[in-house]
Amino acid sequence: MYREFDHIGIITTEAHPGESWVPQTRVWVTNPRLHPQRIEYIRPLEMPHIDPKQVGLWKLWHLPHIAYRVDNLDEAIRGEELVLGPFEPAEFGRVAFIHKEGAIIEYIEYTTLETWFGQPTPWRPAGPTSAGSDS
Image 1 (cartoon, rainbow, N blue to C red):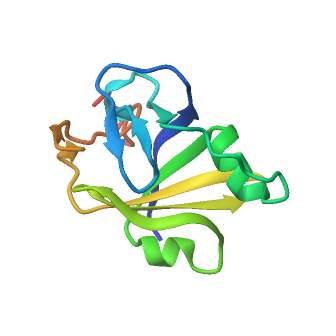
Image 2: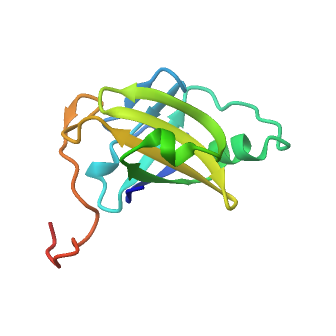
């Protein structure tokens, strides 16, 4: 299965410019492609109260997550501890969150790499490519 780093997601209570609404999770998110370190800020409309016994779900709402772009979301989550999803937050594809090795991981299967919540922001690799260029 193909997997490539996409972004780091961080829960916040502060509004950030350019937020997009995700109705399925009732949060606003920023575009990580516009942040130099690929940070996505996630601001809940209302912070859910999660019982700490629901370890994966609690971590989803209280700790950062790492997101990877995958070519097959169903394959990526097969046999994993699914915390949330899969669902389509916007036109760009499907996402799911799992709890693995003590961390929350988001897998994203893009249907288009040209937009993020309708904003034209073509996806590009984070950091140098394997060819050694900075693009």
